[in-house]
Amino acid sequence: MLIKLCFIYFVCVFINSCGSDTGGSASGPLGNQSVAGSTATFLTYKNTLFALDRGILKVFDISLPTPRLENEINVFGAQTLHIYEDYLYMGGVIGVDIFDISIPQVPLNVGFYSHVRSCDPIVVEDDIGYVTLRTAGDCGRISRDSLDILDVSDPSKPTLLKSFPMSSPWGLAKTPDFLAVCQEGIGLALVDVVDIDDISLISRHSAIKCFDLIYYDERLVTTADNGIGQYAIEGETLTPLSIIPIKNFRAR
Image (tube, rainbow, N blue to C red; front, top):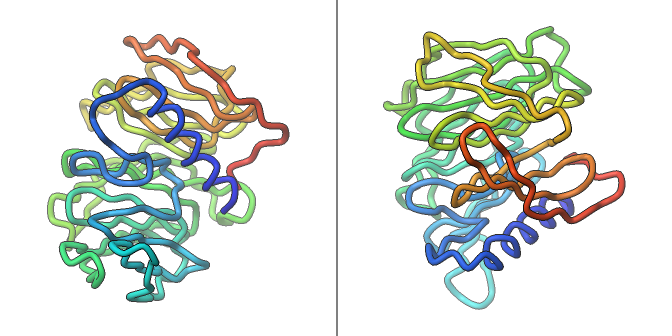
């Protein structure tokens, strides 16, 4: 949890220091989706804080100076949070739970996508969900590492569109041109997902041994072996802008 708190804090510093005029927050939604790492365990939305605590979704009212716990919901195996429009997506060890948060303090479970036991994040854009599944460590015993692409246009009935094999995929972020995926021990992969029926690897940046990503204002912010980095994106080219070195840095 401390690592993730630091990740969001440093992202706020990066974004604010660049003078963006969007007014977005790194821990809350920009426009209609999350601006946070795909392995985030807490997010803010409409004066509400959602936080995962060992399989329990805790909902806080943060409209007042002192936050107040409003709700607690058991969600088996939930590990990560992502917001898209009025829906909260929770990646977990057995699938993706989808909650309607149009009334934020009263989340309503409306859908579930089941997958083999594995980990874990999901990001959503334009009614398409991107889920990475990995079986390394304690994530699962069934040998299936992949990028699953879902149709979530009807959140009550998420359906699998395509499964693309990948080795140890971890955190991910969607940019206008590609999907960026961290592959443990391999590096950062840029994947072409424009045509779901013809997914392909665009390039791999083996020097960026990342665990998680945030895409914001034509930049990628990464958590990697060597700390927290920021990269400008131009086509397939990633140009280093800054790095905060942290020894023995791990996402979790």
